Length: 223
Ligand SMILES: C[S@@+](CC[C@H](N)C(=O)[O-])C[C@H]1O[C@@H](n2cnc3c(N)ncnc32)[C@H](O)[C@@H]1O
Image (cartoon, rainbow, N blue to C red):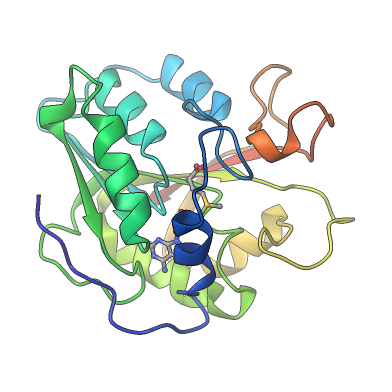
């Protein structure tokens, strides 16, 4: 597994994350769901088996639950990218528990500046609680980087969370469909759900038992 250490902090790569991870973040605490996102699991269940050689990526993959779910769907190569060294280690440990561990690679790097050659040409990118984690000022760059990551015709699936205007401040910053649309020049909208079906909501441990903010889903195709 290669690694590309993030060199400096900026609005989209806050030291807050490494502090949070290195303070001992446990499965099921704060943003951690202790399992793959229910929103992703539902999406994968209604997707066809990926074509041979398909590649997928998860920015800000945390403990790597979603990387494992995507690999178990049949994507042959799944890359999880993490700013936090501590999260990278936690994800690598979690990935070891999967029969698909050989198909998954976890890389330490900053989404906005990591230019490894393998970070392009993806068929599927899953962005869940990454968009809401970054400072809103860097959202336009977030869109450009996704455009670079995807192969033509590749899909960017965004779990839109927390989809609730009453949420103030961040991270996580509240998100709405328009926030994504504004940043995704060069993409065509394939699907928009402002509220996912019951039971498919994203439920991080920190929101357990509270009902929690809304979850939406939007899927975009790189034209
Ligand atoms: C809200 S957490 C979500 C983690 C994971 N998606 C989950 O649901 O458990 C956001 C993650 O993004 C990572 N992150 C923040 N800024 C990043 C950046 N610029 N590049 C890569 N990862 C980043 C953080 O370290 C953190 O683990």
